[in-house]
Amino acid sequence: MTKAVAVQSTELITSLVARQRSRTEPRNNPVRRPRSREKREPAKPVPQMNSDILRGRITKLLYAYKDGIVHSKFSKAFAMRFGQYIRPANYGFMDLTKLLESMNDIIDAV
Image (cartoon, rainbow, N blue to C red; front, side, top):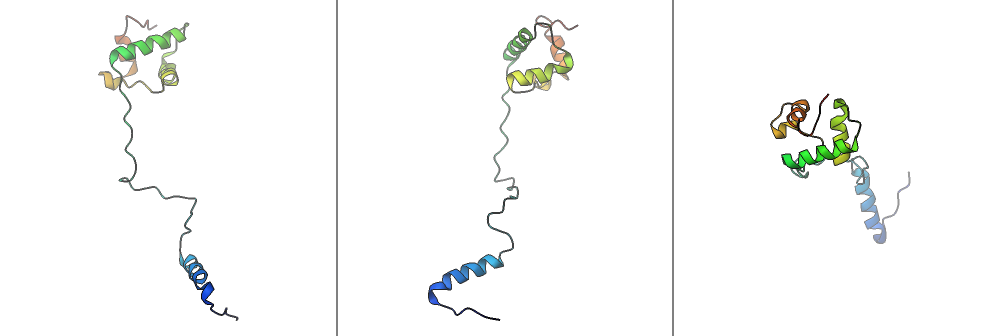
């Protein structure tokens, strides 16, 4: 076995190589561990709209669907158009059906 002769100019490099070999985890590991909860940014609250804005958006959505829209696709269509889902609980309703039935002046549910 051969061993390199220690030269003062290469001592720094030798120590860096020794430290690198002793590490158990690479420094630039592509798989990152999740940050602790305290360091993460808090979830951004979804802006709530008042009922007048909601009524206006529903009216605009219905104008876009002149032939009507199936109830099962209403929530998805609303989210695609306005970037957020309708949350009936925010307006005091148990489900989307009850919310839409309360707007019988602008919606004709068949």
